[in-house]
Image (cartoon, rainbow, N blue to C red; front, side, top):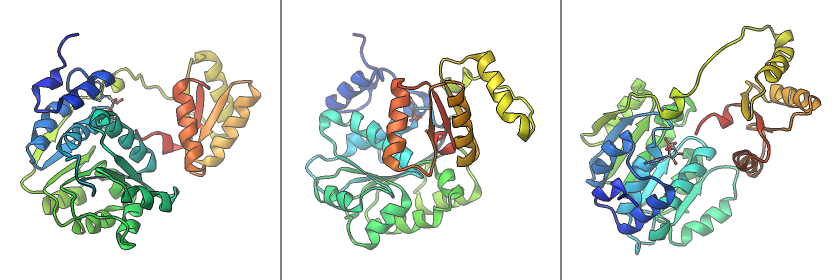
Length: 305
Ligand code: AMP
């Protein structure tokens, strides 16, 4: 096997081994820039998109910096949605697998009590949405005194969803943080101000190139009126005959409508929207990834990550 390029960084062999298993053999652009900074405890503001490998760009240093013996959480990742929290938890779990890193995800609409129970066990990294983390802080069910590294992921999304004040309050509750990184696809002024206030002389990293996945996407549009929409959609489906597809709709009602109409065409399809239980949503995404069904009708809960 050719040597893993990550071996050039000061990383524990257990982490390199995990990266081998993940088939991460060379750093992506954002990883190349961010890894050395975070490993050196340097604050950083990163402008980059999903698909650039940004999760591992902070996940790898977090796993490296964690001291296994310490029982209280040492690193915190704040992220806007449950789906992202789950994905980040999985990525960090995979990277930290052989170092036996414990990751806990805290988000709403899942059992508060089981989160409290898990937090009492050894937890190295906490990945959280702001609302649920705030609940834990207010009820005194999380110890933030040992948190040294804080990652703010998709800051512009958190702003758009109205979480920014909560993020600021949370940051004020972390007395001993030493290293911070803020990731955002865009830099609205509220985010730039937050970075200026909370980060120490941050290095700025900007990855402008489109992620590989985007370069492969060809975009087309068809102008339709409301009453011809469903029929045009059917025609397109027959014409294009895609192996697999995700169809995004604005509303849950439209998701229901389209799903029924596709089922009438004998197309095996499933749906995903914010009104569904978290466990059902996760199951649908898993089944889609495994190819149990090939077409998914969704609201934009499925779009991020
Ligand atoms: P992200 O931008 O974090 O959503 O990552 C996009 C995708 O790139 C994910 O599926 C990762 O598993 C994958 N990925 C991240 N880093 C690497 C790497 N160094 N080599 C290959 N794939 C990677």
